[in-house]
Image (cartoon, rainbow, N blue to C red; front, side):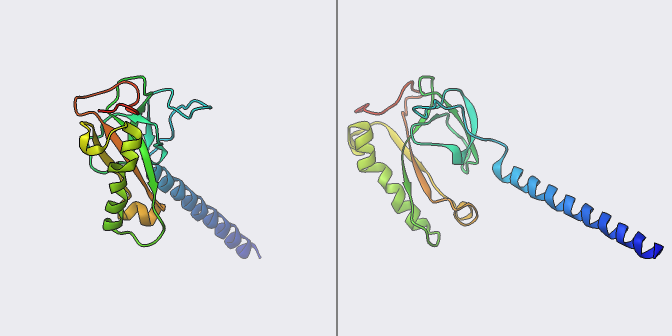
Length: 171
């Protein structure tokens, strides 16, 4: 009886140790995936960024002004209030339909950044404008692992940082 009680206590301690390690591992994986960044301080009414912050790329919203990111693949980015100097502004986004990931489909969705969305935002067609546009797109990994379906259209002035929005810039 004494021997089986000791084995039971040992088994319970082992189970607790394994459970603790497993739960700690889940927390560590979550921390790695979220890269430790959250969202910026935002105005409750407008949703506009009110203080500079480094945010998870999935926290980026239409209307956010940000600093240029020199790397190719983004996991986080620096946002600033639009009344401060900034390099880029998110002006439109497209949510793609579910299905299998396709580079061609992502490219087709990204083309919307240069059409009516640009003209409506800037007040001038892309071909007549001096402003530059690029898109932040899902990768196969973010599509499959994080259900990422959003293409964000980003505008920038090739002459350098701007202050305020480029909405209605007509240039």
